[in-house]
Amino acid sequence: MTVAAPLTEDRAIALKSVRRMFEGVIPAVMCSVSAEGMPHLCFLSQVEYVDDAHVALSFQFFNRSRENVLATRRCTVSVDDPYTAAGIRMQLLYLRTETSGPVFERMKAKLAGIAAHSGMDKVYHLQGADIYLVQSVREVAGRRALQAPQPRCDVREATRAVIDRISACADMATLLDDTLEALRSHLCIDHSMILLADPARQVLYTVASLGYESSGIGAEIPVGHGVAGIAAREGVPLRIGHMTMWQTYGRAIRHRSEAAGLGALSCDEIPLPGLSEPRSQLAVPLRLMGRTVGVLLAESLQDQHFSHDDEDALASIASPLALALSLLQPQEAEPPTPTGTADAPVPPADTGPLITLRHHAPTDSVFLGDSYLIKGVAGAILWKLAREVQLTGRREFTNRELRIASDLRLPDVTDNLEARLILLHKRLQERQAPIQLVRTGRGRFRLDIEGTLVLISA
Image (cartoon, rainbow, N blue to C red):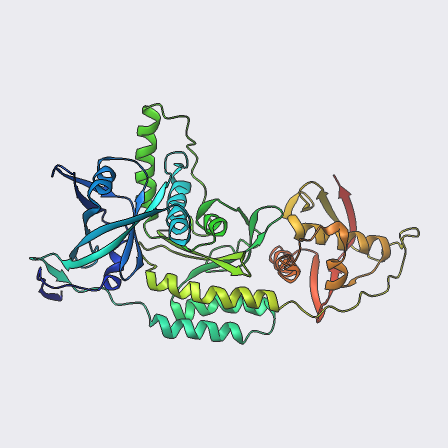
């Protein structure tokens, strides 16, 4: 085992070089002193790196430490490196408390993500982000530090390669798949997914995934639930590196809270998408023109798999990805002339087995026989196409006629119709359904049916 040289108390270091210590694997210790000179120690739930001159500490409770800081404006925070066993001490000067803005939202999102996974929404509550000037950062003397782990890859070079891959995509289906494959081949992220926002229903729906036993295409996560849902709601990246530890901690606090009569707290764990037991998660919102249009979610079975550098990399990738999702809407062709009318239905010419589609109107859920298939806008699209086939016999359709169809209730510029069609295509393909969506040209597609449709609406 390689051992570094002994650390010295006199050596000052740059804050950015030790920001990996601020992950909470080993809780930081805060030492404050009252106006009368009485010292007080406490553990911190969050130390947030702001820039190379500032950190933020979480303000959750008005306790002795906060009382001391407001009186003296000074404190010392000790942080240990879980990888190398090195330690640092920071001399901090309290500047202000922020209750809004990116730092506060990022810390609130992280705390909310922890709470969401541990059923502690009613106990964890961030009142503010206390901003401190870092007056000095010094290594703790007397320790022999182990060698830091080597990075999985050259993050900057890999980020550029992923963005180049995104820029080369000519259609949305390729964009979705190539982005996740590029994350795996260049950034060594083996488990990832892209979820897009449905603002009308306040959910995220999965349009692409990589590295899972089942694709989960069409699966939905409510905005505000789980790591991806919190990142979408707050519009900031959210990274949690030791899920199991946070869940254990959350359960312990929850049990003590219930015993103390702090209210009936939910005991249900919110199920995580993708991996059944992820140890690290990183969710980055896809932002376009001030809106969150989706989330890029990465997961790992290893603790602390994603670093600050990974977060920076995915944040850099998120912007061109969101823009590409907006730009890669196909040029829309004119709708074909119907071959029948609503007053004179054309009997379908299909032969073969009966194909029963059931439609639940309130949620636009569509069932193939008695088996659930899809819901939401994608479900409404499938039902509309199936009704048109049964009514007129027509099988050829265009994106444009769907976009102007009032009964689909598509939202405004964030509708991402192309993504809904890709979702529907993948879902039908996965199910090996006797109904398939086939692309026939730019902005055109066909519904292939191997049998006779029977439509039942509830």
